[in-house]
Length: 454
Image 1 (spheres, one colour):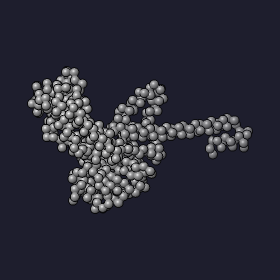
Image 2 (tube, rainbow, N blue to C red):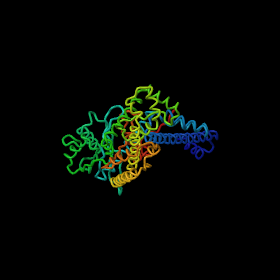
Image 3 (cartoon, rainbow, N blue to C red):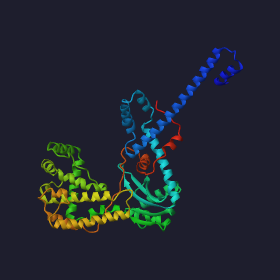
Image 4 (cartoon, helix red, strand yellow):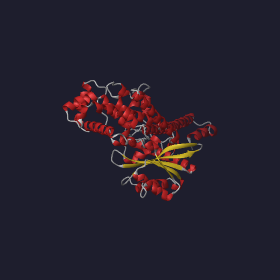
């Protein structure tokens, strides 16, 4: 018989019983109730600690930071802040699990939950469109990345779909097989695919083994479009030969210095001694062609330092350091690529579509024609770096702007750099970081046994 029933039994059935026995059972009852309250309180703390751990993991994924930042930085910082509140607050923070492996598990669980919700939305929509591209990560492995568009209620939603490592090269067959396998896993099929947008590469649009051709064999009605935001890289290939040469030479000069640690340190020291605002150059690679504006601007702003450095060290194309016309062309490229970068940023966004992008593109083309007229009148205020130096020859700019006024199209595709992630967790991190669907954290926590840190 439980203590509460025993106490009631002695008080009703045996009123003459020793009062000390009754007091004993009453104390036993009180202790039992306190123990139950402590157990419930501990359970609530565990649940809160687990939910907090998930929220921190979500923040880390969205910030695209290393998983170890929780244990190495966030937790110690929280403890320091909690000192202002009191020792009890520090003890409560110690109960939150934030180890590297725990953060990875939390992100994986949230990614699966987001993927489940996304698949259910696509299945209800019964139609979807894909944006597909491949990229090589910093470890040299080819990653196939896809975004998906679908109808959710009365609105069109766009979300991160998947990121899969290709086992071989980026061939159309491999990309098709990887995508088809993922669709099958999610209960989807090619018949639901309404359109596919690619960058127009041979592996994507090849007539025999291209990705698009493989899809058309299964779904002949699928519509194929060329990403209008992906064509801006073609502009550099259509530049006049003299400008192309200047761009290539400037890039080689920058990469020559940046790829040699000793020269890079010496150049930084020189910039520091000469009081330069920038203490180094920006590395340029082909996959980062959108950075040309910033790279060239940095080169131009450090031109005096480069000339001084070239006098003491061997540099490729050092003979151009004293050529004023070479610097004229370079500063024009820095200005025009900066304008192209601004246009590219304005053409991106969740609510942008082919209509708004076309309007912005046509507006920029009209702006180019206006600039041509102004340059003909020796007005170069639209080129901030150029206009700051009156020694430049405006005739060169008239020729360059005129050559840039043809058919134009610009593009960008944002990639997330996979810094300290293992390849197995890249997709999970990307899904949590890029998806507009929030993970159902409370639901995930309810499915797991809560624990606290010791």
